[in-house]
Image 1 (cartoon, rainbow, N blue to C red):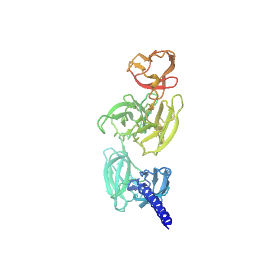
Image 2 (tube, rainbow, N blue to C red):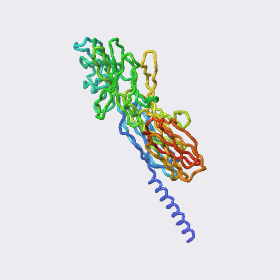
Image 3 (cartoon, rainbow, N blue to C red):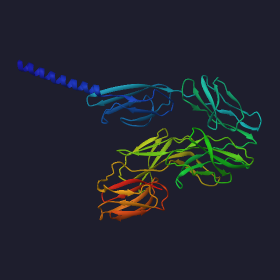
Image 4 (cartoon, helix red, strand yellow):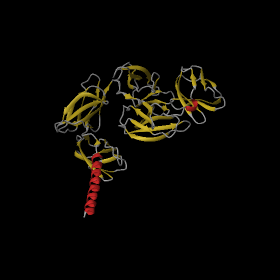
Length: 473
């Protein structure tokens, strides 16, 4: 009897131990995730799991009817909803003997109804202008009037009937954006109302600003407005003060409608530009809305290269494309990202230099002449980086001088007289400027013919690669 009693006690202790262990697993497993609490219909919503469970666990997501744009398993996910209302996002995780469930609400906000722009037309300079309006309106909706992409300061509250923004006396293309009162979900109304003034200078838009691979400067491109009486275009650039633009150049109307900004330094920063057109009488149009270039920056990390860039501003687009190439190889398109993303980590597989640029494809190409070149996309500056963790043990003691250098660059490897090693000088755009193979403890390179700037010096021995930055004066 005593043995039977002891056996039963043993079984109970084992069961209690198992229960305690299961409870401990339950208490540490987390289904926590992050997402915004409200969004507009068709807005891309990012949902990120933050609980720290193993990637080998089973993740079951319920997005309450959302369209899944990307993501699987643990995530992260990008989703969108096509209907309004309160939506419930639920995550259930099962791992070994443990389970957890988490539900969060998100309010999907309805967009205003669509109506058409009305009015517009031509009127003589000095006249009263022409009316611009909307074919209908929705009660408790705010309608803002824009001209050439800029808010005019004119807004109306919906009445359920057509709206009239009044007579407009400034030439341009008028559009309207609306949102339901109390929300931030703006929707652009359909169509445009174009106002022109006879006897005045027409309005000129920029088509794109991009990095010029030939000059390594910013290039401004526009489609010419029609006008036999037009003289030239003025190019404006934002200075050190926000939204203050100064004139940096002119382009005759008869020339190709392209301008290279020789003062720009795309490797250092992005720039904003505007444009205007001047007629033969010296009358100048209003400045266009600005366009802003993409500036790409690269930080080498432990596991790869971290790419960071600013958003392109000037026209709407949906996708960024990331291009990469290695030394002596061709360019590859390695990934595409949504236009609301501004960073990317490339997990490299080579110890050498990697070169990148970011591309945005325009919805419509630019045509600087009626029968001429066609520009399809905006590109960022080209940037090159060397990975961390490059082996340097066998090249310890190497000396490179002077740095900065103007004519002769000396590379000294003390005590090494029989080891062959290659030397390359590579620009930030990934182009090789100089290459040689040498041996001995001291080598002099004539760099007088290389343009001023910052370069990578790449020294490769039998088993190691050393990469240094040098400055050419």
